[in-house]
Length: 88
Image 1 (spheres, rainbow, N blue to C red):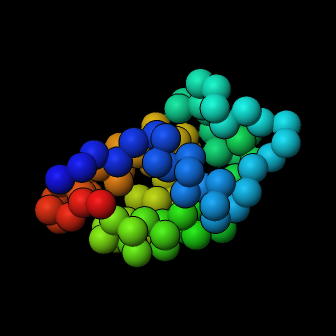
Image 2 (tube, helix red, strand yellow; image 1 turned 45 degrees about the horizontal axis):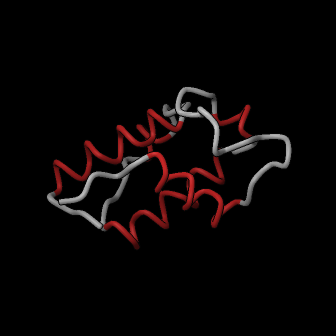
Image 3 (cartoon, rainbow, N blue to C red; image 1 turned 30 degrees about the vertical axis):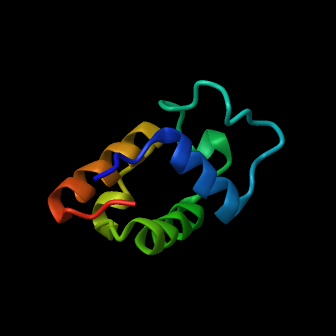
């Protein structure tokens, strides 16, 4: 099973919701709040939908709403991948 990475998350988020011109997603953004990166809850839900299609993992909505940073999102995805045995 492959691990889900920060780079993969950023790729999917760019495809789903675009990118704020004021934010450099290629920088060190792992611990930056999604709001500061220009992503709202709708963008995170769209990203979760893409993850379900591409990676075969469904994220619990109640946990997804608690995730505030890309690093937290990646950790949640990898935990769910490990529990489900899914992988891209």
